[in-house]
Image (cartoon, rainbow, N blue to C red):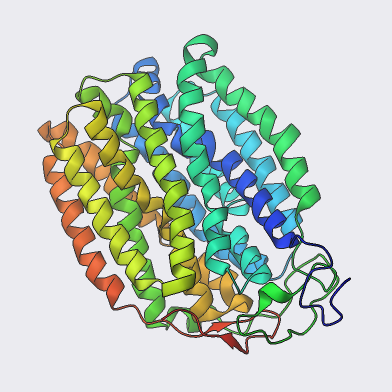
Length: 434
């Protein structure tokens, strides 16, 4: 029997978890070849196109530079327009990007495709609209839902590099990218568009929209756009101290970690390892990401975001130290695992933004935060270039580890506010973990 208050679902399953599942699928599709398999292609591209490996690091930088203004726009769209259209357009763009890369013959072709095609497409089918959507489906268990959703990125790193390492010698790198394009456009995009919904209705149940058990106001029955209007302007978001603290935390966390993930192919080669071992190390990064995303979500729900962020920063610093001294594959795998925890920073980051700004302004605030993502790409390029000049990763490792220790202290200074219920139009629905 359905609950007349609408606070419980008519069946035993909350549809919000189905929405989270297709978000995972979308993130796997978007991040698989474009990011986590990227280090495996760099040595091949460098040899075939007669270019330095560091040149191809500009591809990721171009993507992030292009994605930063896209994030602001998509964040505003996510608060107002249909998630189906946003995700559908993004996944279609990713399929076109994969196909385009398969025809590249010069380094600038790849850099341009990353900057002009992948950047806006990736923004429309990953974290910005995904986290905005989840914040409309969840107040209770928000951190857990965010953690599960970001597992898509970790799964991409766990599964795809090993598959690429297996099929790359047989199929060639161009065919690998073409198969990826076909899977995205013919399988994944239709599933995501068919399943996704913008927000819960009484038919779905509204009990996940409160923390303290209050009965929320019924959400709209429409599947297009946000359930509520945005209250804050961009200037007001930028005036919040917490916003800037969170930006600093995630930039250093992501930048220092990806400095070694993106250079993993060259780093592994310097230790005497090949394609298969590189795939193993990247897979360990993905496993760590999946594990950390789930754990960080639960910890954010229970304890808040300060301690998880500080602990993550120290763990990544330890991972860099292990890589610095390690030469055997098991030791390097341990270092890669600890470094891989860094990607889960978006779980407590999203939880903290939801607590600070509420679901009604989440898309705008999160999109603005992503505007600064290109700055994180300074780390991978600087580490790669420094190694090419000096022949050693150690100076870059020392700088990155030191910055992470400072970020751990900054995380502990983070102030958190009460979490707000989207269904209640921003009224307090319970206390976010302090």
